[in-house]
Image (cartoon, rainbow, N blue to C red; front, side):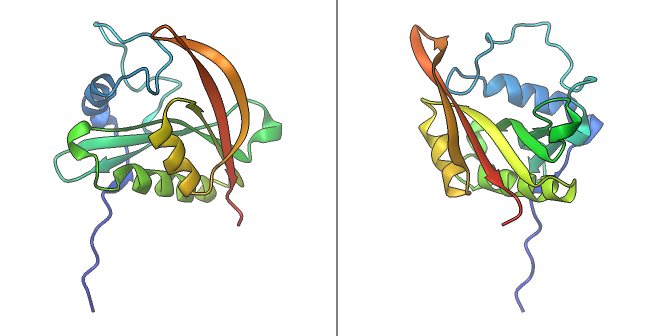
Length: 167
């Protein structure tokens, strides 16, 4: 019988904050970010709205090289059955190893474990690699806000995608 390869995906820990902050700043791009480029001094990575338990990280043994954040799309009780991916990043040097896909699958599993029946996300229209990944994992485009953001002098669509977690 073949030996099991341990998963590189784990829950985030409070001591991951510095590494995740560095990763977040290193991967910032208008391909996926609508906020201005962060400038020092940087806000803490974890705070009241972004807690370690909201994150799964990809760790190849020397600390986080990727993360995905799960949150609620609203504070309304009537949609507590929905979770939303509110961030996904993989370090440049760790790309091409399937870590984004592994993080996405782990997020689906974790959302189910937390009682969610649906998972949603928002992605910029010009981020073709991310859109292709999401589509290959069962996410469908459910809405588009045309020209919602002006980034680098061009209008960019905000694409809403979602999938069921019950099938």
